[in-house]
Image 1 (tube, rainbow over the protein chains, first blue to last red):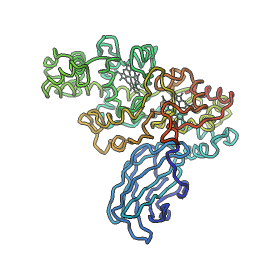
Image 2: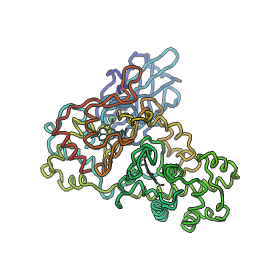
Image 3: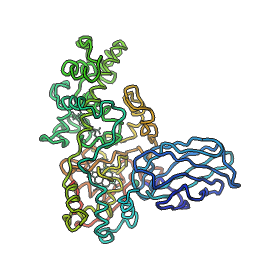
Image 4: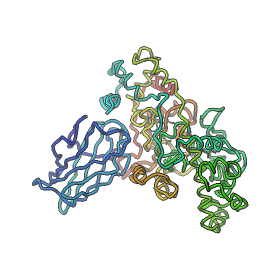
Length: 128
Length: 403
Ligand SMILES: [Cu+2]
């Protein structure tokens, strides 16, 4: 079941630290997301909270955006084990709550961002 | 990540449709195998919703309750009737599914505590709330809630008083209540509604305590260490010391067969829910799996967030963030642990697959399954057809038989 038609435009970061990486551009180039996710610290099956910041094309914080999280393992044909939510911390800062990964392997995560006329999707790919 | 997982990744993702035995050298395959063994000191994670978990007195009471046929309408049904075979914790199918009880294959209880959601469709989020179901189910223990409360007070009043002072007082108030339950027959529901709220609370408290004591006992039942655990330990990293068919079967399991994409870790289960296109039972409606239970679970008074739970709200993330999405629930069932798999059968949630060979053939053909496709494109089933030689199937069975 290929529910994850995630385009392969995300970064492949291997066993690295997403926090140290450059902000990732959305498919439409309207939104940039900087995820503070240290892959090396992620434990399979444990809940994690992932803070992130959003900026717009001109580099300014994207505030009061509505963000949804989706993802899964395209190679295994399944989605995320849970339904994570995003909380707005203000000033373009947000946090993903309720996220966990059920196994090691290649995962994809997508942030779908809507704010005023801005609609974009930012994809991340990483290996656990 | 731990490095066995990194190896698993390399194996699973490098070239999934090719036998991996040749590409993995001996040390790598044994490192991978380490990720699938239990040791004598492996323990499931604690259940914060059950304050009796880990309490030896509760475990002792739970053991008595688990084996007590008096805890049933016919005086002849205990948990052990379906969960113990010849003195071992092997599912017992002598009460036939569909004829004498509902259409589901009996699941093992030893090692169940490693899971987060229970039963094939994940309809319960703790062992104690699961234990309450068979007690009131007309095809199983067939007792009503008031009868359970009165019975446990009569038989186990002293143990109950020791666990929770106050619960055992004024036992005679509960004797002589009519059979009553909020989920029973019409007469039982009417009798339940007629009880005063204080009595109902008291009955519920005893009912829940019964479940929590049984769950404490179940959580202390480890899955027995298997031939597989022993073989890997004795090989001490040297693949030459493993039976070669078992080792080849393991490489099929983690490589060509894609089995470990779901049957992962020491329990051979990712604890998650998948649609694997298992055929419907003839003459039965299509089983919706988790989709039918995820709503009721969220509303259940016996869930992690409910009034009978001992957990803080923050300990209930699995329930709080449960996925209701169609593709995560429709026709999905929990990946069963494969420990002890060759001791049980028939296989899958309603025994649709009679033998391990039939299970493997199912994965090789990867049928569309009863839930079809989503909006014309994606199959609900996550399986993809496999290519497997007769030799690989035989090796895979040899491996499964050691679990
Ligand atoms: Cu997966």
